[in-house]
Amino acid sequence: MEKLNLKFIDNQTHGYLKISIPDLKKYTNQRPENYSEYSFYCPYNDCLYLEEDCDLSEFSKYIENKGYTIKNEKGYIDLKTEYVNCYYFDDNKFIRNKNISAFRRAFL
Image (cartoon, rainbow, N blue to C red):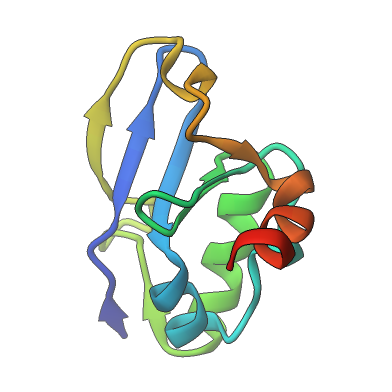
C-alpha cells in the first residue's frame, strides 16, 4: 500500500487533515461537497481541511480501498502535524465546507 504524505493541522481544540483539491480528486475522485460542514475550504491554497472525527476517518477508509494509506505500520493514522493557535480557522480565508458549493459556483 502506498503511503500518502499529508499534513495534519492541530488548532488546540480540534484536528484537520489538509489536502489540496487536485490531490483529493486524484486519490479519491471525490468532490469537497462530499464532506461535512465541520470541514473547511481555503480558496487561497485550494485546500480542503477534513475534520478529524468524521471526515478524516471516511477519507482514510476511502483511500485504503483505492490502495493508499495514511496509517503507520501499527494501524494508527500517522501524519506530520502542524500546531496552530485555536483561532486559526476563524480567519476569513477559511470557508465552512457547507458553504463551498455556492463559493465555487460564484468564483471558480
